[in-house]
Length: 90
Image 1 (cartoon, helix red, strand yellow):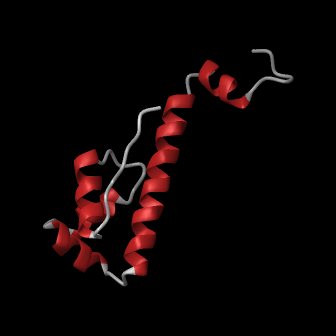
Image 2 (cartoon, one colour):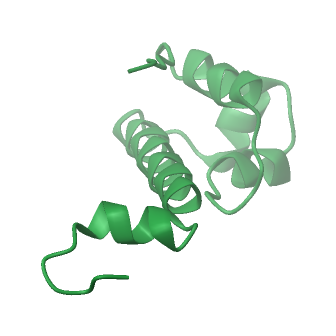
C-alpha cells in the first residue's frame, strides 16, 4: 500500500472492499428511490405490500440494503409503484 496520493477506489480494491462497498451503495440508492416514491404516492407499507402481493416484512426487506433482495423483488416493487427498474452494464 502506497498511502500518499493513492486513489481511494484503488485502495478499496487493494483491500478487497471495493465490490462490497459498491454493491451496498447501489442498494442504498435504489432503496432510497423506492422509499421516496412510496412517500410521493402517499403509500403505506401495507398498501405497497398488497400491490406487490407480498407481506410487509418482505417489503421491509426490499428496502433494507443489508438484506440480499433479488432483482426480481426490486422490479416487482418498482412495478407496484408504476415505475420501471433499470439496470445498466458499463
